[in-house]
Structures are given as C-alpha cells and as structure tokens.
Image (cartoon, each protein chain N blue to C red):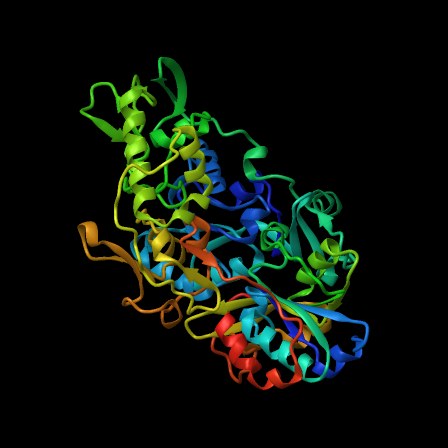
Length: 398
Length: 159
C-alpha cells in the first residue's frame, strides 16, 4: 500500500477556498483510507466542518481507486452537472490520486491534502507503516517500518484528520429510542445514528458509503405515528421521533428474514461474521424453511476474483459499489421477483467483462459471495516424468 | 499503485541452493500482477522454470495484498519451505520478512516508482519514480505484461 500523511492544516485549507466556492470533496477508498485520512466517514466530518464555517459543499464523491484515471473520468461523466457547477475540489487521496483528479479536471481549483512518502505495509500491531520510503525523505528502507507517528514528528505533518484541529459541532435534535432520549445529528439517517450510539441493528444491504435501498428488511423498526414497520436505513431522523428497535414482533420478523436467507443460500453463508452474530443473537439453530438451494455455477474465470452466486443474498451492495464507487457498472441484477439474480457484464464470466479489479465489490459484499482469488498449495514430490504435463495441472488448479 | 520490475532469472537462481533450499513462491495479486511481475501467471511461469531446472519447490501461494498482514494471516500459510521467493514490490517483501523471521526471504524485484493506471486502455504510467529510476518518469507500460510502450497515451497535466 502507498503511505500518505495529511500535509495541510484546516486553516491552510480554508485559505485556499473562498465563501463563493462550490466545493466537491473527492476521496479514495483504498490506501489513504487505511492511513486514516480519507473515506466516507472522513468526507462527512470535513463536510460538517466546512458547512459550519459557511462553505458550500455540493457533493461528496467516493472513488474505489483514485489512481485509476479511467475511473476518475467515469465519475466525472456520471456527475457531469455537479462537476460543471463545482469550482473547487478537495482531494483526499495520495499524490497519484491528486494528479489523476488534476488531469481530469484541468480548469478547476484542485486542492491536495496529503503527502506521499512511499510504499509500506498494514501491520496488525502498528497499523500503516512505511517500509520503502522515497529517497527525498532521507529515510532508509526498513522492514520494521516507520509508523505514521514517526513521519508526522519528523516531517512536521498532521497526525490526524481535519476534525482533530477543530471538533465539528453539527446541529442536533432529540429523539426517543426504546424509551430513552437520544441526541442525534439533524438530517441524518436513523440507522446511522442508532449505530453511532452503539445500538446494534441488523443490516445487510446498507453501508454508509453506498447509501440505502431498503432491500434486506433486516433493519426494520417501529416509529410512533407511522404505519407498520419501517426500514431505519431509509428513514431520516425527525425532532421528537419515538423509535422502538426491539420487541417481540420486530424480533420475530427479523428471525424470519434471516431464516429465509439461510434457507435459500448455501450453508457456508454462515461463515459471514454478520450473519453468524445475528443467528447467535436470535438463537437460530436450525432452518425452519425448506426452500430449494441455489445451484449456480461458481465463476472463477477472473485472475483476481471468484464469484459464488450460491452465497448471494441479492442485497445489491456489489452492484452499488461497482456503479457508484468504481463507475464501471460491471455487476447488475437480471430478471425479476423470485427469479432475480446478479450477473456480470451481459451474463458472461467475470474475465470477459470490463472489470477494473478495483475490488470495491469484494470489500462491500456481506456474505463473501465475491472473494479475492487466493491460492495456497503444496506441490512437493513431482517425479521428473510428470513435469511434461505440469502446465496443464497448474492451469486447472488455478 | 507501485511498479516493480523482476530481476533476470539468472540472478534469482544465483541466490538459490539446489541441495539445501526448499522453495516457496508467494505472489501478490494486486500491484505486482498489474505490472506484470506477480499474479497467477508469473507464479506458474517461475515455478515451472525452477522445477525444470531441478530446484525443489514445495509451496506456491497467491495472495491479494502481500503487504497487508491481515491478508497474510487470512491465507494461513503453512510453509514447508525454508526459502521464500516473493513476487511483489519491496513492501510485500518487507511484510514477509517480518512475518517469517526463520526463513530466507528473497527479494527478486526492484521498485521503480508509483504509477497511474488506465484499465480501459490497459496502460500504466510512471508518475513518481524512486531516485535510481528517474529516467522512467512518464514512461508507459502494458498492464499485466509490463511490456514498455512507445508514445504517450495518458496525458498528465501537472507532473
């Protein structure tokens, strides 16, 4: 991964902006996200800070890999009206991502926020570390790596994101959740606020980076004055809202939804951490529905990905990740109702599609229906005469 | 994305011992694959060549990000080998060196710099080279093979 650190203070950022600017915040979702200076959460924090100071943020644009210039161009085309209107783009990416954005938007004010130091690792113990620094840093290559704290101290950079310079103070409203009052951000989604306040609500199709479509029906809650149960991922918070997140009816409904998902998909769907957690929580031990199991072919044609439709729960996360984050639209739904399936390209193998291998679908799939292709095999004990057929064996195992 | 070039095969075998070394080849499936030095095809190519030349290759693995310890842990590598050849950038090599301290981890690639890619045109372009490779600045290569290209197909405005 590429190691980058924030190089601009909030005051310097504001000096580059004017109050009349129409601002787009652009962020990469790969290396810099792991360095703690990008991603949807950080974009939202920056948007709140800027709005509080009277700036006009018109869009947050999340891209799966900002160093792929063709993806940046596709984002520009997909949001042409917004980008035509925009006068400034704040870029939360590494320096390569910055140059891609600058190339795609040559006549806009593009403000880079990070300095790139070289290549590094993500360590379990230390987080992101720099192991192969650029010579300009005067640091020696080091397998143990330099932590971000080392870099910040040595190069006078900024240790955390912009919100560390100034705490955002968004407008708050009060709602009641399970009889207790709760202060939440105005104009935000009910599910986001419940999760932010550590109230666990099951959700499979929702992710704050991808938005909501209300497909999985797992996050249903009761809101006083509203008919029936409503999906909390598609509901905005309102002043005085009275929400019930758990009662007998809600639990029974969530259990049924979960059991139907398990009944239809392959048994190894239970390897998914989220599904396993909720099965334990709702004490689901066996399957009460007898639905025919899917029997689709696993697509391992790609060099990078394996797609197993038998694990797919049709939550649409991969489709939204591919369309919104990468801009490629390689994955799609086909057919309707109970015949609905996800397909790649024009119902062709992954290898024949325009997949950019940005891996957005892999990162957002909740059930491991799309996984990276990793191979680990023992190949000891080849007698000499089998070597003639060795390439064929390798091809079939890969 | 990080661009690294593999050293010639002759230099790789200079670092190996036919009698003593049990070899594992670990290949990165992200940047190194894009730059034509990793992924499944390069792993197969190098593995086959080493076996044909009489080296004892015991394990082969392809990992999505060799530079990520969580990914390495997920791969649950149980290597019989005492020598690891890493087909990845120097960051991947550093990661394996740290995680397999009792094994000889060979670096067989050299970092060139950071690149911008265009997967539609199947090209990548060197944007931030390391100091020893400043002459590579602006050069373009074919994705997956690393074959050098003539002419400029990605126009960058601000390098």
